[in-house]
Length: 296
Image (cartoon, rainbow, N blue to C red):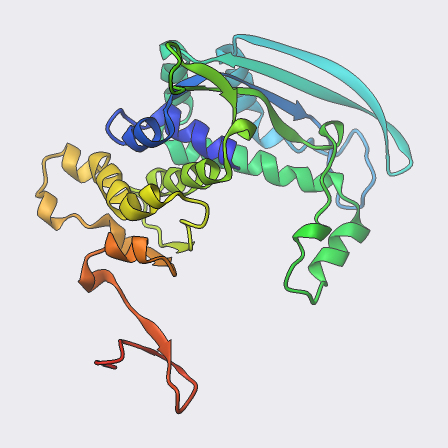
């Protein structure tokens, strides 16, 4: 999902809101990306026939418009065995070179970044089709707390959607020109920074409550110490209220974010009124909010 989050942000956000990506990560934009769609068919009874709708029919018009925006688009036929039947599926490849014309076209097709992201979210969730009912039932009925290891990873030709050649332009220290890198070449901390900041920016003007559980886990000390300020400044810079000249004093978008952390770096970057401290009562063993001097 980090690719879809980053794509939505770099296409839709302005220079001010993207400052953290540039200043902290060195990201200056996208160079190109490829979308690969496996146009499978879906049937409730797990059999296929010409009468059943294709899973992409409900967004067929969007795909046709995306093809017009693509720098290159081609299709290939693949025959594979599905539920004991030989089925001919269609792989669609769309290559996009990112420039001002593409950005303009995408903003017409998807008015806001959240619409753009939701489009990819639907495609990602269709990948579950590649898994058997036995595999899905095993996951759904699992009594364990950790089931990630049980979720199978489909091969590219078994999934409905994935990105390829997703190149990000990144400034590298001591190099004169930005270098195109794949997202998998970024560190764990950079991935976490992109995902956390990207989601918050994408939802900044929506009625959303964001729950962040230790988002700073892989951050370096510098990012931890200024994460809250970076997030606050970036969200305010792209807010619609500021664009329309309303009083900035009435804007507090961080009120819609609940964040848990054990890091003193994160706490030090917060206003005291925004920090709640929890501890266990030594007598009752219940958790209580406050500090050792004031348990109110």
